[in-house]
Image 1: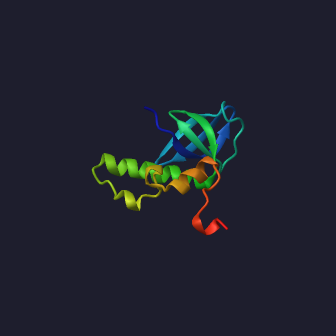
Image 2 (image 1 turned 60 degrees about the horizontal axis):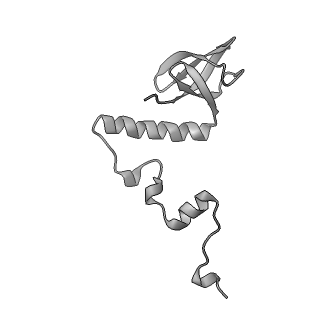
Image 3 (image 1 turned 135 degrees about the vertical axis):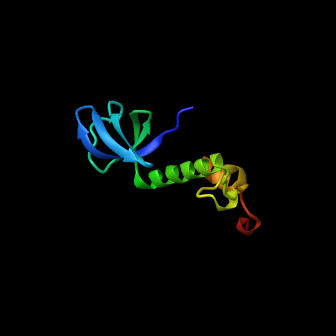
Length: 111
């Protein structure tokens, strides 16, 4: 299994970027994402950027990786305090909204 790591571009060279994230630095191929600029965030798999990321998505991915790292160390957090909520804990209304389905009528909404 390969896990994508969010990495921030520090500098660029043709076809590559020098990136850092999660305590490491790498020379990353940028062929799949095109030209990048310092400060941009990329999702990196091994040594290849696969996707550009917005800062909010970087935070979500890092929070998930932190949970995974804690679980691997035996320090798993209470899922109720996780940085994200699993769909298995969602209500039917939340799942319908996620899928784009119209909300079901409630007794209050029926005339």
